Length: 159
Image (tube, rainbow, N blue to C red; front, side):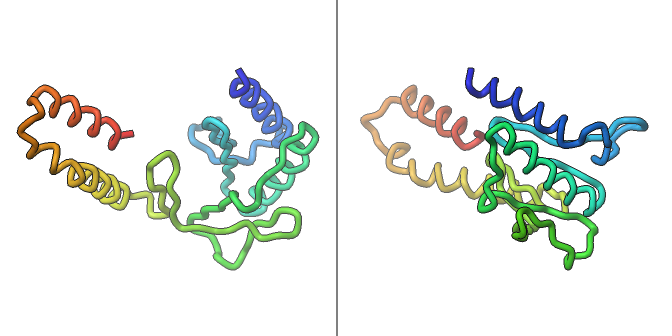
């Protein structure tokens, strides 16, 4: 229940942040994407730096009114096709800019490709299965037990 209440509050804060101004990214003829929400994270989006700066400032102000505070150490900015000299600030501090980050196990990059993400996931899978060599070679374990370990390990790697 607390997660659901948080999502209600963050949705209210985001609605008040944009306050009728549609400054997000156009994704259909008349629609704009203003933010992405997942669990306890929110990612405001904008097509211009000035809009993102305004959105970040409004989000900080409106969030504080509900008791929410943006953690500057955990906040990142990713920009595409923008002058790298222009920084987005919050409370007088520059927000850290990145060209890639990992979110929910997936690598997100400014190039938008999936090659790096696939490479990382394959490396993780290889590490998990290499650690299981002794289990595969163990003659005291049944094939059924080995298959159960394999399936649970494969599922863990995918998540």
